[in-house]
Image (cartoon, rainbow, N blue to C red):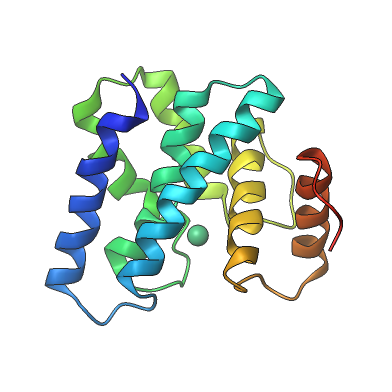
Length: 158
Ligand SMILES: [Fe+2]
């Protein structure tokens, strides 16, 4: 399986969620663009860090599923656990891969802390990608992550 197969399912998931509840905290365009670009950034960083790129891409794609499901940014990482499990159920991930993905979804807002390699991957990708939309929090942990990822990718410091 490649993440390519997941993309239409996840875009449909987003579209249905917005049909049911249009007044979510972020526009559908942002959620769609951010999901796809985090998928790609996660895969590139996973490649550099010698991590599984399919697991990484899956995490990047669905990491904000809790915000899409609830429409709110409040505790959206933790609230993504159940929707992520449900979304992944049909795709034949191993139990171990599923728990890695779900843990990274749950942990991705913990930008001030260190967690497992895949959780760190999505935190870094999230900050790196959000910065292009001018949507990065003005906090030290975010700025430090952004600079570290940019260094890792050979990009100039901001
Ligand atoms: Fe998020």
